[in-house]
Image 1 (cartoon, helix red, strand yellow):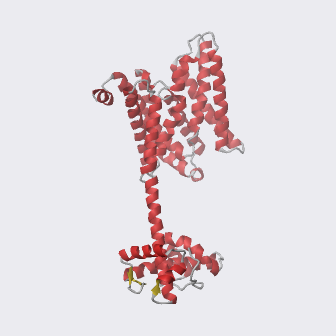
Image 2 (cartoon, rainbow, N blue to C red):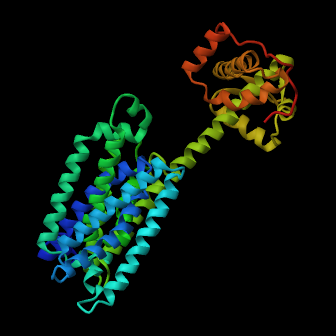
Image 3 (tube, rainbow, N blue to C red):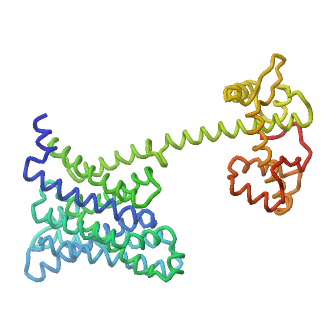
Length: 435
Protein backbone atom coordinates (compact mmCIF):
# COMPACT_ATOMS: atom_id res chain seq x y z
CA UNK A 1 0.00 0.00 0.00
CA UNK A 2 2.86 2.38 0.77
CA UNK A 3 4.35 1.75 -2.67
CA UNK A 4 0.98 2.27 -4.30
CA UNK A 5 0.41 5.57 -2.52
CA UNK A 6 3.93 6.67 -3.34
CA UNK A 7 3.30 6.06 -7.03
CA UNK A 8 -0.24 7.46 -6.99
CA UNK A 9 0.80 10.67 -5.23
CA UNK A 10 3.74 11.19 -7.63
CA UNK A 11 6.40 11.23 -4.95
CA UNK A 12 9.03 9.76 -7.29
CA UNK A 13 10.61 12.17 -9.76
CA UNK A 14 10.55 9.78 -12.73
CA UNK A 15 6.92 8.81 -12.12
CA UNK A 16 6.00 12.47 -11.84
CA UNK A 17 7.58 13.23 -15.22
CA UNK A 18 5.88 10.29 -16.91
CA UNK A 19 2.45 11.13 -15.47
CA UNK A 20 2.69 14.82 -16.38
CA UNK A 21 3.76 14.02 -19.94
CA UNK A 22 1.14 11.34 -20.59
CA UNK A 23 -1.66 13.30 -18.88
CA UNK A 24 -0.95 16.30 -21.11
CA UNK A 25 -1.00 13.97 -24.10
CA UNK A 26 -4.30 12.43 -22.93
CA UNK A 27 -5.95 15.85 -22.62
CA UNK A 28 -4.85 16.92 -26.09
CA UNK A 29 -5.73 13.54 -27.63
CA UNK A 30 -9.22 13.62 -26.11
CA UNK A 31 -9.99 17.09 -27.48
CA UNK A 32 -8.64 16.50 -30.99
CA UNK A 33 -9.98 12.95 -31.13
CA UNK A 34 -13.52 14.21 -30.44
CA UNK A 35 -13.33 16.49 -33.47
CA UNK A 36 -11.84 13.79 -35.67
CA UNK A 37 -14.49 11.29 -34.58
CA UNK A 38 -17.39 13.63 -35.34
CA UNK A 39 -15.74 14.70 -38.60
CA UNK A 40 -15.62 11.01 -39.57
CA UNK A 41 -11.85 11.19 -39.72
CA UNK A 42 -11.12 8.63 -37.01
CA UNK A 43 -8.98 6.48 -39.29
CA UNK A 44 -6.92 9.46 -40.42
CA UNK A 45 -4.97 9.06 -37.19
CA UNK A 46 -4.21 5.50 -38.25
CA UNK A 47 -2.99 6.78 -41.61
CA UNK A 48 -0.75 9.37 -39.95
CA UNK A 49 0.62 6.92 -37.40
CA UNK A 50 1.51 4.34 -40.07
CA UNK A 51 3.00 7.05 -42.28
CA UNK A 52 5.34 8.13 -39.48
CA UNK A 53 7.23 4.86 -39.88
CA UNK A 54 8.79 5.72 -43.27
CA UNK A 55 9.22 9.29 -42.04
CA UNK A 56 11.28 8.07 -39.11
CA UNK A 57 13.27 5.76 -41.41
CA UNK A 58 14.02 8.52 -43.91
CA UNK A 59 15.01 10.93 -41.15
CA UNK A 60 17.33 8.26 -39.71
CA UNK A 61 18.99 7.71 -43.09
CA UNK A 62 19.36 11.45 -43.70
CA UNK A 63 21.02 11.97 -40.34
CA UNK A 64 23.34 9.03 -41.00
CA UNK A 65 24.26 10.52 -44.40
CA UNK A 66 25.05 13.84 -42.70
CA UNK A 67 27.48 12.15 -40.34
CA UNK A 68 25.25 11.83 -37.30
CA UNK A 69 24.17 8.79 -35.31
CA UNK A 70 20.65 8.86 -36.65
CA UNK A 71 19.12 8.73 -33.18
CA UNK A 72 18.45 12.43 -32.54
CA UNK A 73 14.87 12.33 -31.29
CA UNK A 74 13.95 15.81 -32.55
CA UNK A 75 15.06 14.91 -36.08
CA UNK A 76 13.15 11.64 -35.96
CA UNK A 77 9.99 13.40 -34.80
CA UNK A 78 10.31 16.04 -37.49
CA UNK A 79 10.61 13.29 -40.08
CA UNK A 80 7.56 11.56 -38.59
CA UNK A 81 5.56 14.81 -38.64
CA UNK A 82 6.47 15.57 -42.25
CA UNK A 83 5.53 12.05 -43.38
CA UNK A 84 2.28 12.12 -41.44
CA UNK A 85 1.24 15.45 -42.95
CA UNK A 86 2.18 14.21 -46.42
CA UNK A 87 0.04 11.09 -45.94
CA UNK A 88 -2.93 13.15 -44.72
CA UNK A 89 -2.51 15.45 -47.70
CA UNK A 90 -2.45 12.48 -50.06
CA UNK A 91 -5.70 11.19 -48.58
CA UNK A 92 -7.37 14.54 -49.12
CA UNK A 93 -5.96 14.79 -52.66
CA UNK A 94 -7.18 11.31 -53.61
CA UNK A 95 -10.59 12.00 -52.08
CA UNK A 96 -11.06 15.26 -53.99
CA UNK A 97 -9.60 14.25 -57.37
CA UNK A 98 -10.74 10.65 -57.81
CA UNK A 99 -13.90 8.60 -57.40
CA UNK A 100 -12.47 6.71 -54.41
CA UNK A 101 -14.22 7.15 -51.10
CA UNK A 102 -12.56 8.08 -47.82
CA UNK A 103 -12.09 4.52 -46.60
CA UNK A 104 -10.49 3.39 -49.85
CA UNK A 105 -8.19 6.43 -49.98
CA UNK A 106 -7.07 5.94 -46.37
CA UNK A 107 -6.51 2.21 -46.85
CA UNK A 108 -4.44 2.85 -49.97
CA UNK A 109 -2.19 5.47 -48.34
CA UNK A 110 -1.90 3.60 -45.03
CA UNK A 111 -0.87 0.26 -46.54
CA UNK A 112 1.56 1.87 -48.98
CA UNK A 113 3.31 4.03 -46.41
CA UNK A 114 3.54 1.24 -43.86
CA UNK A 115 5.02 -1.10 -46.46
CA UNK A 116 7.57 1.57 -47.34
CA UNK A 117 8.41 1.93 -43.67
CA UNK A 118 9.05 -1.80 -43.28
CA UNK A 119 11.39 -1.72 -46.29
CA UNK A 120 13.31 1.23 -44.85
CA UNK A 121 13.67 -0.48 -41.48
CA UNK A 122 15.08 -3.55 -43.22
CA UNK A 123 17.61 -1.34 -44.99
CA UNK A 124 18.54 0.36 -41.72
CA UNK A 125 18.98 -3.00 -40.04
CA UNK A 126 21.63 -3.97 -42.61
CA UNK A 127 23.58 -0.71 -42.40
CA UNK A 128 27.13 -1.08 -41.04
CA UNK A 129 26.80 2.19 -39.13
CA UNK A 130 24.06 0.97 -36.85
CA UNK A 131 20.76 -0.84 -36.64
CA UNK A 132 17.18 0.00 -35.93
CA UNK A 133 17.42 -0.62 -32.18
CA UNK A 134 17.47 3.11 -31.59
CA UNK A 135 14.16 3.46 -33.37
CA UNK A 136 12.27 1.16 -31.02
CA UNK A 137 11.33 4.06 -28.74
CA UNK A 138 9.51 5.66 -31.67
CA UNK A 139 7.80 2.48 -32.80
CA UNK A 140 6.82 1.07 -29.40
CA UNK A 141 7.04 4.18 -27.21
CA UNK A 142 9.25 4.91 -24.23
CA UNK A 143 6.78 5.93 -21.57
CA UNK A 144 8.71 4.54 -18.61
CA UNK A 145 12.01 6.15 -19.68
CA UNK A 146 10.59 9.59 -20.45
CA UNK A 147 12.98 12.40 -19.46
CA UNK A 148 12.35 15.99 -18.46
CA UNK A 149 12.78 17.32 -21.98
CA UNK A 150 10.25 14.84 -23.38
CA UNK A 151 7.65 15.78 -20.76
CA UNK A 152 8.16 19.50 -21.35
CA UNK A 153 7.91 19.04 -25.13
CA UNK A 154 4.69 17.04 -24.83
CA UNK A 155 3.25 19.61 -22.40
CA UNK A 156 4.03 22.57 -24.67
CA UNK A 157 2.64 20.82 -27.73
CA UNK A 158 -0.50 19.81 -25.84
CA UNK A 159 -1.09 23.38 -24.63
CA UNK A 160 -0.73 24.72 -28.18
CA UNK A 161 -3.17 22.10 -29.49
CA UNK A 162 -5.73 22.93 -26.79
CA UNK A 163 -5.44 26.68 -27.46
CA UNK A 164 -6.02 26.17 -31.20
CA UNK A 165 -9.03 23.94 -30.50
CA UNK A 166 -10.48 26.59 -28.17
CA UNK A 167 -9.90 29.45 -30.62
CA UNK A 168 -11.44 27.58 -33.55
CA UNK A 169 -14.16 25.83 -31.56
CA UNK A 170 -17.11 27.41 -33.38
CA UNK A 171 -15.57 26.79 -36.79
CA UNK A 172 -14.70 23.17 -36.00
CA UNK A 173 -18.18 22.56 -34.62
CA UNK A 174 -19.81 23.82 -37.81
CA UNK A 175 -17.35 21.82 -39.94
CA UNK A 176 -18.05 18.59 -38.04
CA UNK A 177 -21.84 18.81 -38.13
CA UNK A 178 -22.61 20.46 -41.49
CA UNK A 179 -19.72 20.93 -43.90
CA UNK A 180 -21.93 22.00 -46.82
CA UNK A 181 -23.74 24.65 -44.79
CA UNK A 182 -20.40 25.98 -43.58
CA UNK A 183 -19.20 26.21 -47.19
CA UNK A 184 -22.39 27.98 -48.28
CA UNK A 185 -21.83 30.57 -45.57
CA UNK A 186 -18.34 31.33 -46.89
CA UNK A 187 -16.29 29.43 -44.31
CA UNK A 188 -12.98 28.01 -45.63
CA UNK A 189 -13.89 24.37 -45.06
CA UNK A 190 -10.81 23.03 -46.84
CA UNK A 191 -8.51 25.17 -44.71
CA UNK A 192 -10.33 24.13 -41.54
CA UNK A 193 -10.01 20.50 -42.60
CA UNK A 194 -6.28 20.97 -43.09
CA UNK A 195 -5.91 22.61 -39.66
CA UNK A 196 -7.81 19.74 -38.04
CA UNK A 197 -5.56 17.23 -39.77
CA UNK A 198 -2.52 19.23 -38.60
CA UNK A 199 -3.75 18.97 -35.03
CA UNK A 200 -4.31 15.23 -35.45
CA UNK A 201 -0.81 14.85 -36.88
CA UNK A 202 0.67 16.88 -34.02
CA UNK A 203 -1.02 14.75 -31.36
CA UNK A 204 0.02 11.60 -33.20
CA UNK A 205 3.66 12.65 -33.40
CA UNK A 206 3.94 13.75 -29.76
CA UNK A 207 2.18 10.53 -28.80
CA UNK A 208 4.92 8.49 -30.46
CA UNK A 209 7.19 9.19 -27.48
CA UNK A 210 4.57 8.02 -25.00
CA UNK A 211 2.79 5.01 -26.52
CA UNK A 212 4.48 4.54 -29.90
CA UNK A 213 3.01 4.55 -33.39
CA UNK A 214 1.29 1.18 -32.87
CA UNK A 215 -0.92 2.41 -30.02
CA UNK A 216 -1.19 6.15 -30.60
CA UNK A 217 -4.36 5.81 -32.68
CA UNK A 218 -6.11 4.03 -29.81
CA UNK A 219 -5.12 6.81 -27.41
CA UNK A 220 -6.43 9.37 -29.91
CA UNK A 221 -9.82 7.78 -30.60
CA UNK A 222 -10.84 5.59 -27.64
CA UNK A 223 -11.40 8.47 -25.12
CA UNK A 224 -13.47 10.36 -27.70
CA UNK A 225 -15.52 7.26 -28.51
CA UNK A 226 -16.13 6.67 -24.80
CA UNK A 227 -17.20 10.29 -24.26
CA UNK A 228 -19.73 10.01 -27.08
CA UNK A 229 -21.84 7.70 -24.90
CA UNK A 230 -22.24 10.38 -22.21
CA UNK A 231 -23.36 13.51 -24.05
CA UNK A 232 -24.66 15.04 -27.27
CA UNK A 233 -22.91 18.38 -26.71
CA UNK A 234 -19.55 18.85 -28.43
CA UNK A 235 -18.01 21.05 -25.73
CA UNK A 236 -18.93 18.60 -22.97
CA UNK A 237 -17.79 15.67 -25.11
CA UNK A 238 -14.36 17.26 -25.53
CA UNK A 239 -14.08 17.83 -21.77
CA UNK A 240 -15.12 14.25 -20.97
CA UNK A 241 -12.78 12.79 -23.59
CA UNK A 242 -9.89 14.86 -22.24
CA UNK A 243 -10.71 13.69 -18.73
CA UNK A 244 -10.82 10.05 -19.81
CA UNK A 245 -7.52 10.47 -21.65
CA UNK A 246 -5.88 12.06 -18.60
CA UNK A 247 -7.30 9.44 -16.20
CA UNK A 248 -6.22 6.60 -18.49
CA UNK A 249 -2.69 7.98 -18.60
CA UNK A 250 -2.45 8.42 -14.84
CA UNK A 251 -3.89 5.00 -14.02
CA UNK A 252 -1.89 3.25 -16.75
CA UNK A 253 1.39 4.73 -15.52
CA UNK A 254 0.48 3.83 -11.93
CA UNK A 255 -0.24 0.20 -12.83
CA UNK A 256 2.91 -0.02 -14.92
CA UNK A 257 5.01 1.36 -12.05
CA UNK A 258 3.49 -1.12 -9.59
CA UNK A 259 3.84 -4.26 -11.75
CA UNK A 260 7.33 -5.23 -13.00
CA UNK A 261 7.93 -5.53 -16.78
CA UNK A 262 4.51 -4.09 -17.58
CA UNK A 263 4.68 -1.77 -20.66
CA UNK A 264 3.19 1.58 -19.72
CA UNK A 265 1.98 2.50 -23.21
CA UNK A 266 -0.01 -0.70 -23.64
CA UNK A 267 -1.47 -0.43 -20.14
CA UNK A 268 -2.58 3.15 -20.81
CA UNK A 269 -4.47 2.01 -23.90
CA UNK A 270 -6.01 -0.93 -22.02
CA UNK A 271 -7.21 1.39 -19.25
CA UNK A 272 -8.74 3.66 -21.90
CA UNK A 273 -10.44 0.59 -23.39
CA UNK A 274 -11.84 -0.24 -19.94
CA UNK A 275 -13.29 3.28 -19.74
CA UNK A 276 -14.84 2.71 -23.15
CA UNK A 277 -16.49 -0.55 -22.03
CA UNK A 278 -17.91 1.18 -18.95
CA UNK A 279 -19.23 3.99 -21.13
CA UNK A 280 -20.69 1.49 -23.59
CA UNK A 281 -22.64 -0.16 -20.77
CA UNK A 282 -23.54 2.74 -18.48
CA UNK A 283 -23.30 5.89 -20.63
CA UNK A 284 -26.34 8.05 -19.89
CA UNK A 285 -26.75 9.16 -23.49
CA UNK A 286 -26.14 6.05 -25.63
CA UNK A 287 -25.17 3.32 -23.17
CA UNK A 288 -26.59 -0.14 -23.71
CA UNK A 289 -28.44 -0.18 -20.38
CA UNK A 290 -30.01 3.21 -21.02
CA UNK A 291 -30.93 2.23 -24.57
CA UNK A 292 -32.48 -1.00 -23.32
CA UNK A 293 -34.47 0.86 -20.66
CA UNK A 294 -35.74 3.43 -23.18
CA UNK A 295 -36.59 0.72 -25.69
CA UNK A 296 -38.49 -1.22 -23.05
CA UNK A 297 -40.36 1.90 -21.95
CA UNK A 298 -41.27 2.65 -25.57
CA UNK A 299 -42.61 -0.86 -26.12
CA UNK A 300 -44.69 -0.62 -22.95
CA UNK A 301 -46.08 2.77 -24.03
CA UNK A 302 -46.92 1.49 -27.52
CA UNK A 303 -48.75 -1.57 -26.15
CA UNK A 304 -50.65 0.66 -23.70
CA UNK A 305 -51.71 3.02 -26.48
CA UNK A 306 -52.72 0.11 -28.69
CA UNK A 307 -54.91 -1.19 -25.88
CA UNK A 308 -56.59 2.19 -25.33
CA UNK A 309 -57.24 2.63 -29.06
CA UNK A 310 -58.59 -0.91 -29.35
CA UNK A 311 -61.02 -0.30 -26.49
CA UNK A 312 -62.14 3.02 -28.02
CA UNK A 313 -62.71 1.47 -31.45
CA UNK A 314 -64.53 -1.55 -29.98
CA UNK A 315 -66.77 0.82 -28.05
CA UNK A 316 -67.62 2.65 -31.31
CA UNK A 317 -69.08 -0.53 -32.80
CA UNK A 318 -70.31 -2.37 -29.74
CA UNK A 319 -70.59 -1.72 -26.01
CA UNK A 320 -69.66 -2.93 -23.44
CA UNK A 321 -66.18 -4.06 -24.48
CA UNK A 322 -65.52 -7.74 -23.94
CA UNK A 323 -62.12 -9.39 -23.55
CA UNK A 324 -62.78 -11.50 -26.67
CA UNK A 325 -63.21 -8.34 -28.74
CA UNK A 326 -59.76 -7.10 -27.76
CA UNK A 327 -58.22 -10.46 -28.60
CA UNK A 328 -59.76 -10.32 -32.06
CA UNK A 329 -58.43 -6.85 -32.82
CA UNK A 330 -54.71 -7.62 -32.42
CA UNK A 331 -52.32 -10.54 -32.27
CA UNK A 332 -52.39 -10.61 -28.50
CA UNK A 333 -52.47 -13.70 -26.33
CA UNK A 334 -55.01 -13.83 -23.50
CA UNK A 335 -52.20 -13.55 -20.94
CA UNK A 336 -50.75 -10.50 -22.70
CA UNK A 337 -54.13 -8.77 -22.81
CA UNK A 338 -54.67 -9.45 -19.12
CA UNK A 339 -51.28 -7.97 -18.28
CA UNK A 340 -51.95 -4.87 -20.40
CA UNK A 341 -55.36 -4.40 -18.81
CA UNK A 342 -53.93 -4.85 -15.32
CA UNK A 343 -51.17 -2.30 -16.03
CA UNK A 344 -53.63 0.26 -17.37
CA UNK A 345 -55.94 -0.38 -14.43
CA UNK A 346 -53.09 0.39 -12.03
CA UNK A 347 -52.58 3.66 -13.92
CA UNK A 348 -56.23 4.51 -13.32
CA UNK A 349 -57.19 4.34 -17.00
CA UNK A 350 -59.47 1.29 -16.92
CA UNK A 351 -62.09 -0.34 -14.77
CA UNK A 352 -62.53 -4.12 -14.89
CA UNK A 353 -66.00 -5.42 -14.12
CA UNK A 354 -66.93 -8.82 -12.81
CA UNK A 355 -68.42 -9.89 -16.15
CA UNK A 356 -64.95 -9.52 -17.77
CA UNK A 357 -65.85 -6.25 -19.49
CA UNK A 358 -63.63 -3.19 -19.38
CA UNK A 359 -64.52 0.47 -19.23
CA UNK A 360 -62.44 3.59 -19.66
CA UNK A 361 -62.13 5.92 -16.69
CA UNK A 362 -62.14 9.72 -17.29
CA UNK A 363 -58.31 9.66 -17.39
CA UNK A 364 -58.36 6.70 -19.76
CA UNK A 365 -61.02 8.41 -21.88
CA UNK A 366 -58.76 11.43 -22.32
CA UNK A 367 -55.68 9.34 -23.12
CA UNK A 368 -57.56 7.10 -25.56
CA UNK A 369 -59.11 10.09 -27.33
CA UNK A 370 -55.68 11.61 -27.82
CA UNK A 371 -54.24 8.38 -29.25
CA UNK A 372 -57.18 7.73 -31.57
CA UNK A 373 -57.23 11.34 -32.75
CA UNK A 374 -53.51 11.31 -33.61
CA UNK A 375 -53.95 8.02 -35.44
CA UNK A 376 -56.87 9.24 -37.53
CA UNK A 377 -55.34 12.62 -38.29
CA UNK A 378 -52.35 10.83 -39.73
CA UNK A 379 -54.63 8.46 -41.65
CA UNK A 380 -56.49 11.39 -43.20
CA UNK A 381 -53.22 13.07 -44.13
CA UNK A 382 -51.89 9.92 -45.82
CA UNK A 383 -55.14 9.41 -47.74
CA UNK A 384 -55.44 13.01 -48.95
CA UNK A 385 -51.82 13.94 -49.53
CA UNK A 386 -49.87 10.67 -49.97
CA UNK A 387 -52.40 8.81 -52.18
CA UNK A 388 -52.55 5.78 -49.90
CA UNK A 389 -55.68 3.68 -50.21
CA UNK A 390 -57.99 3.72 -47.16
CA UNK A 391 -57.73 -0.06 -46.93
CA UNK A 392 -53.94 0.20 -46.47
CA UNK A 393 -53.64 3.33 -44.37
CA UNK A 394 -54.27 1.81 -40.94
CA UNK A 395 -50.98 -0.07 -40.75
CA UNK A 396 -49.00 2.94 -42.02
CA UNK A 397 -50.56 5.21 -39.39
CA UNK A 398 -49.95 2.59 -36.75
CA UNK A 399 -46.20 3.12 -37.12
CA UNK A 400 -46.20 6.88 -36.52
CA UNK A 401 -49.04 7.70 -34.13
CA UNK A 402 -46.90 7.04 -31.06
CA UNK A 403 -44.30 9.71 -31.86
CA UNK A 404 -46.50 12.57 -33.08
CA UNK A 405 -45.58 15.69 -31.12
CA UNK A 406 -47.74 18.68 -30.28
CA UNK A 407 -46.30 20.80 -33.11
CA UNK A 408 -46.81 18.10 -35.74
CA UNK A 409 -50.38 17.48 -34.55
CA UNK A 410 -51.01 21.21 -34.86
CA UNK A 411 -49.70 21.18 -38.43
CA UNK A 412 -51.94 18.22 -39.28
CA UNK A 413 -54.95 20.07 -37.84
CA UNK A 414 -54.12 23.11 -39.94
CA UNK A 415 -53.61 21.10 -43.13
CA UNK A 416 -56.74 18.99 -42.64
CA UNK A 417 -58.87 21.85 -41.20
CA UNK A 418 -59.79 19.69 -38.21
CA UNK A 419 -61.12 20.84 -34.86
CA UNK A 420 -60.21 19.27 -31.52
CA UNK A 421 -62.76 16.47 -31.74
CA UNK A 422 -61.88 12.91 -32.64
CA UNK A 423 -62.59 12.42 -36.36
CA UNK A 424 -64.38 9.33 -37.50
CA UNK A 425 -62.31 6.56 -39.02
CA UNK A 426 -61.67 7.05 -42.77
CA UNK A 427 -61.99 3.30 -43.32
CA UNK A 428 -64.12 0.47 -42.07
CA UNK A 429 -63.01 -0.65 -38.65
CA UNK A 430 -61.97 -4.28 -38.79
CA UNK A 431 -62.13 -6.85 -36.09
CA UNK A 432 -58.65 -8.19 -36.44
CA UNK A 433 -55.45 -8.26 -38.39
CA UNK A 434 -53.84 -5.35 -36.61
CA UNK A 435 -50.38 -5.24 -35.08
